[in-house]
Length: 405
Ligand code: AMP
Image 1: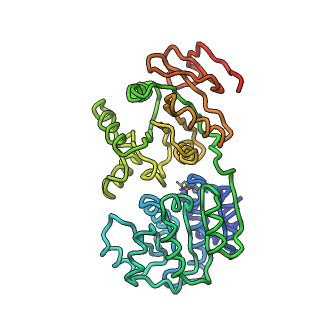
Image 2: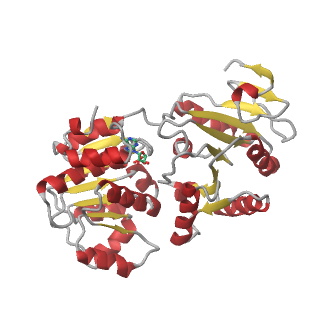
Image 3: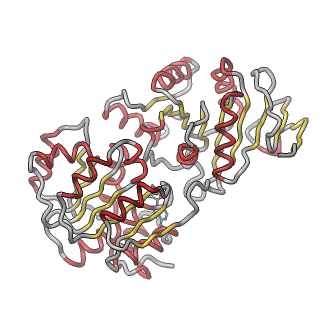
C-alpha cells in the first residue's frame, strides 16, 4: 500500500518516502482517506502508531491542493513537548512550504505573537497558552477549517476540559474535527457528541493493549532496596537508551543524582524543570549524549525518541493506562524493547490491575538480596540465582513454576 493510494498528492507521498516511511501505518490507512473525505473522526490510537502524520498529512494535502490562506488548522495538545514534536513533524512533512507556530507556556510570548502576525497555516498549542492569546483577540480563526484534539484523554486528565470548551466555542462551527485519544471514555464521548458531526470511530488496536514487540518483566523488591536494584539492573541489562519513570519529581531528582554519581550519563524531566531544560534533556537523550532519562508521567507525554531499549518503572503506576503509555515508549517502529517494573508487595495489586487490563501477564523475576517476595498468584515466576546478561537464553533460571490463579 502506497501513500498515494490513500488519496494523498504525490509530492506529499514522496516526502513520506524521503522520511523513511515506506508504507502507511494502520491508523494512517484508516484516518487519511476518511479525513480527505471530510469526515469528523475519533481515532483511538496510542502514541507510536504514526497518529501525528495521520492528521498532518491530510491537513497538508488540503493546504497544497486548495491553496488555502490564513490559519486553517489548529492542533490542541496536552503538553509542551508533544506540541513541539508536532510542530517538528509539520516542518518535515511540509518541506517547510507552510508556516506553523507553537503556542506553549514557558516560551517567549512576544516571539509567538510575532509569528502569528506574520501569518501561519497551522497553530499547535497547549490549551492554557492558547486561551491567553484568544483572550487578547490576538488570533484570527475565521479561516479555520480543521481542529485536531490530540491525546484528548490526557488533556481531560490534566483538567483542560473547561479551556477546551471555551476554545471550541470561539471557533467557526463549519469545520472538521479530528479527535485522537489512547482510550475511549464517557467524557470523550461527551465531547464528541457536543462538538463533532457524526464522527467516524477508528481504532487500530484495542485500547489498553501493549505492543507485541515489548517484553515485560517485573522484579519483586523491598521498598528500601529499589535504588540498589535499579543500579544492579543497569549493570546487568545491555541497554542503549533507558527511560526511568518515577512517581514524583523529588524521586526523579534523587535518582538522577545517584545515577550521575555512578558515572551514568543521565538527565531528568519533570514539571519543575524549565522548558529549556526539558528540551536540552530530550535533545541529549535523542542524540545519545545521555543514555538514561528519568521522567515523571506528565512530563514524559509525547516523548518521541526511537530506539529506547528499556523502560524501567521505578514504581508501579496507579492507573493501568499510565503503564501502557509508559512502556509504549519502547518497542517502537518494529524494534523490540524491554519494560521492567520494580514491584513491592504493596504495589502487587496495581500490577495485577495492569495485567487484567492489558490481558497480558508480566513475568516476575526474583533476584536474591533485594528483599523481594513472590506473591502466590504470580502467573509466571522465575527465581534467578546468577547473572542475567541481558539475554533471555543466558538466564540461569533455577526455578520456574506457574501456580494456579
Ligand atoms: P506518533 O505516533 O505520531 O508519535 O509517531 C511515531 C513515530 O513513527 C514518529 O517518529 C514518526 O516519524 C514515525 N512514523 C509515522 N508514520 C510512519 C510511517 N508510515 N512509517 C514509519 N514511521 C512512521
